[in-house]
Amino acid sequence: MSKLIALEGLDGAGTTTQARRLADALAARGRAAHVTREPSDGPIGRLIREMLTGGHAIPGAPIGQATFGLLFAADRLDHVQREVDPALAAGTVVISDRWYHSSFAYQGTGAERGWIRMLNDRARRPDLTVFLRVGAEVAAERRVAAGRAQELFEDLAMQRKVAAAYDDVLAELTAAGEAIAVLDGEQALDDVTASIVAAVLAAL
Ligand SMILES: Nc1ncnc2c1ncn2[C@@H]1O[C@H](COP(=O)(O)OP(=O)(O)OP(=O)(O)O)[C@@H](O)[C@H]1O
Ligand SMILES: [Mg+2]
Image (tube, rainbow, N blue to C red; front, side):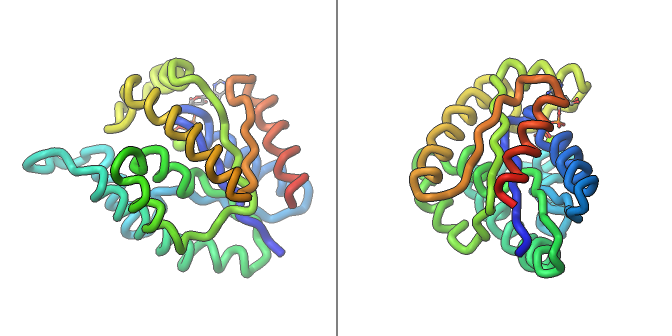
C-alpha cells in the first residue's frame, strides 16, 4: 500500500528542498514518488498563491485568516481528490510540501482553532509527517540569503508565533495517534536529507 508523507516547517525550514531530495532518494531505491505541495497547483491553490504574494492589488482591508482557512481547506480536498488519491492508488509514494499542520499553525490559532480543525475533518491523515525544526531567526536568514520576496506571513514576530503554534499542534496530533517525526532542520542539507530518508524508510 502506498503512503502519504507530509513535510512541514516554518518558511525557510527547507521543506521544498527536502521534498525533492527525498523523492530522489526513494527513486534511487526503486520507489516511485510523486512530489506535490500546498497550496496545490490546482485552481484553488493557484488562487491562494496569488493572494499570498499580493501579485495584484487587492482593494480594501487585508484578507482575513478565516478566509484563508476556508480556501486552504477547500484546496486540500480538491488536491486529495484530483491528485493525491489517484497517485496513491497507482502505487506511488506521495510527498507533500506542507499539509493541514500548516493550516493549524498559520490559521488555526486563537478563536478559529476548533473551526479550522472542523474544516479539515475530511482531509486525509498522512502516514508520516516530518517536521523540520528550524529556529525563526535561522529560517529568516535563509529566506534573505535566498533572496526570497517577503510573503504575507513571513515577518519574524509572526514566524515566532507560528513556531509556537506548530509546537502545540504537533503535540496534540501526536497525542491523538498521528505519526510525526520532529527532525533537526538546522543541520547541513545532506544530514537533514539522511534523517528524513531514515524516518521515511522506517515508515514505508
Ligand atoms: N539544511 C540547510 N542548510 C542550509 N541552507 C538550507 C538548508 N535547507 C534549506 N536551505 C536553504 O534555505 C532556503 C530555503 O529553503 P526551502 O525553499 O527549501 O525552504 P521552504 O521550507 O520550502 O520555504 P518556504 O516555506 O518559504 O517555501 C533555500 O535557499 C535552501 O537552499
Ligand atoms: Mg517552499
